[in-house]
Image (spheres, helix red, strand yellow):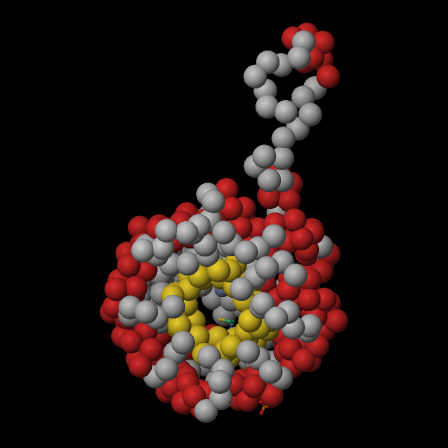
Length: 321
Ligand code: COA
Ligand code: ZN
């Protein structure tokens, strides 16, 4: 049993999931600067970009230049999303340290997002896993829509388990359970995480949450309580899949970090430098959006009381300095 300080690992997916849906094209230099700044915040992983078709995801068409241009912090693993063999080849060419393969657990979202059936994707990913065995590059697999599909509704748990087993047998280094359009709710998250952890013991499980319906932090706690310690999150709560109707932002990294740190759970991430980056995001993506933690500050960011309190009541007794 682990009796030390509890800790989690965060995979910052803002540069990939965050930017893939933005209308404004963020320049290659700005993307590199964003990743470089995030590199100094203490993340375990940063998902830098995706090696997808530039027609499908024009916002990340400069994936190779970005991966080539970033500064590599020795403590960070630089990953990227890969949907097919062509993507693997491009990712390897520019020194991607870990692949994040992707397919959906629901048929219709897989077809809409990847223009393949689930069977075709499974066979593509199996070929990638085989090809990657010759290199020393670990390949995680993100399973989209496991908590619900915006086209097909609830996804049978058996479909998720079958895919997770097949991918693990094919050599996946880990599985990410993705709530692509924020359909998950806490008891559902706990139940699926428990089942997957039990059925695939020893396989690292990550949870990928979107805050579409305001349940992302509650879902994060539900996953953590079952023993999941790896979380995807996007700075500023950016993000969303362009091929999933109604998609909106990922769980906010800064809110996830703040929440776990309040609870005494180590995240490795320094909140202040992260908030400094988050402050610049509206300008980067050329649109305004609310960033609650930036407005409110840390929960113990207390305020100077109004001057008249001291005049009326004198110095306050029992108030900590
Ligand atoms: N990187 C760069 N180009 C790629 C590519 C890749 N990984 N895969 C395919 N292409 C190119 C092909 O070379 C071809 O180019 P051409 O038209 O100039 O000849 C074109 O894209 C079509 O190739 P095809 O194999 O027919 O792909 P497709 O059109 O059926 O699309 C995917 C399949 C998977 C490549 C595409 O749907 C995709 O990239 N989806 C990603 C969606 C995504 O990232 N969603 C959000 C994250 S969940
Ligand atoms: Zn996502």
